[in-house]
Image (cartoon, rainbow, N blue to C red; front, side, top):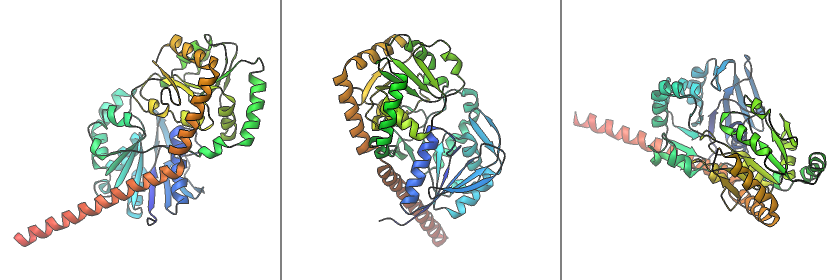
Length: 394
């Protein structure tokens, strides 16, 4: 059994702020805390106030947000806070991308010596001008890190940033509370109610869950609703909501549900659809959540972890992006084939419960921490030996 560590994580936000990365950070932080570690999270608040609280055994420091630009919260005193954390934590763990956080950390002297690791969630795609100016800091940030974690082999292979530093990259599966989703009698009962309410015509239910933003393929989804003989449930909100103005009469938009209701929707749905169009969709964690409920996915075939989360022909089906006709044809075929849909759903659930658990994620991340700390000790020892040799020679 490894010794407890003092771990500080850095991310844009933390729940109850809604987001896939935020949910992952919470599950990982609480899992590490349950394993006996001291875990702190430094993040932005949703307003201009400073707050500290403890949730699930995790200490959370929410810094005042001055404003937000390009999905990046700008907060007060982050650099000084990170410098303080570096003096008290055994290791820092950054969740990328958070440009303001990485910029503030690179500006600290401690970033050159304090061991830190990175979970690289996705490339920065849309903000090309900002990325051009930010690139020098990003290079320093990644180069100074001890190790980098990525959620899929595809992200390591195809990311222009990670492909140049593969030697320090580790693929680590996300973990979710799969048992809570899979074996949930209350969710199953609520799912029956949802089907009665939204699919009383006996037609199947197709579910979309996610923010309504540029890379999710919302326009493709809207066109698809007219081409499939099914009821569509769209759960989410965002800047591309207007693209859903022309949807089929059997499509229902729900802007928000809590975690328990979302689990019920995963059980109620016949298929989850994820028609993403840009590599900003680095994984699609909702696929893993739906799989835990035994619900297969139809998703886009991008060069990202979306095809690792949803294995074509194993846990669901993948299609070429940006094509509503192809997406509709694949959905229709899967909805018409009960045997195939059941087999894919069963295989999807089995995979999640074996490979995407919180305990396994905690174990794998802990191994990365230990390797990073070991390498830091070795480097420090080597530097000391080098200094001793120079002194002896002089």
